[in-house]
Image 1 (cartoon, helix red, strand yellow):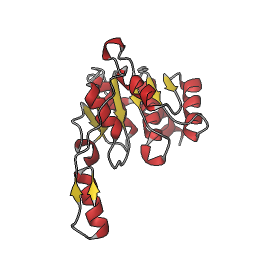
Image 2 (tube, rainbow, N blue to C red; image 1 turned 135 degrees about the vertical axis):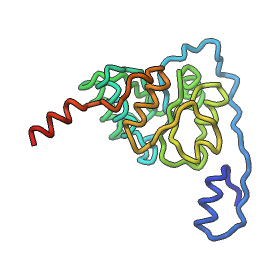
Image 3 (cartoon, rainbow, N blue to C red; image 1 turned 180 degrees about the vertical axis):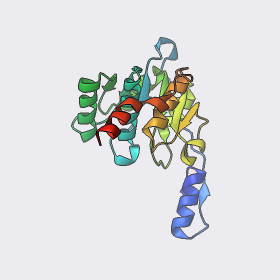
Image 4 (tube, one colour; image 1 turned 60 degrees about the horizontal axis):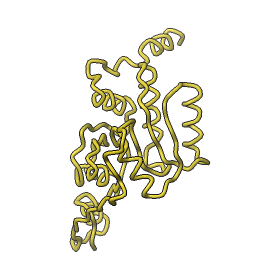
Length: 200
C-alpha cells in the first residue's frame, strides 16, 4: 500500500494490522495561471465541500464569535449553494452582519486564483488523507491557519493553529493572526452568559 503522509500510514497500519505500508511524497505543482502580482490578499479562504468532517459549523461559530467582538474579517467559502451549510451562511450574514462570501463549487483554476488572492488559508477540517489546499497555499506563499492535527504538520508549517472542535480557539487564532493578541476572545459573550445564569 502506498499512502501520502505519515499520519495516513499509521492509520492504515492500525486498521489493517499489516506493516506493508509505504509513504510516498506527492507535491502538487501550482499552475502558472496564478499571477501573484495581481492579487489583493484580502480575507480568509477555505476551499472545501460541505461534508461534516470539513467542520464548517465550528468555523461559522468562530466567525460569529468574532462578530460579537466587533471584528468582521471576510471569509470566502466554496460549498454548494443548496447545502445546509449555505443556508447557515445566509442566516449569519443576514442576522449577524458577518462578512462571508460563498462562491459555490469552483473549477480548480478559479479556486487557485481565489486562494492566491487571500490574506490566509484557514483550514479547520477534522481529518484529511492529504489536504491539497494546504500544499497549494504553501506553494503560493499564503499564510495558513489550521487545525492542530497531525495531517496538517505532515505537509505544512502553519502560521497559527487551533483546536478544530472549539469555535473560541478558531476565533482566537484569527485574532492572533490579525494582530489583535491583546484583545482576548475569552470574554466573548460573558455578559450574555451572566444574564442567562441570572435568569435561570
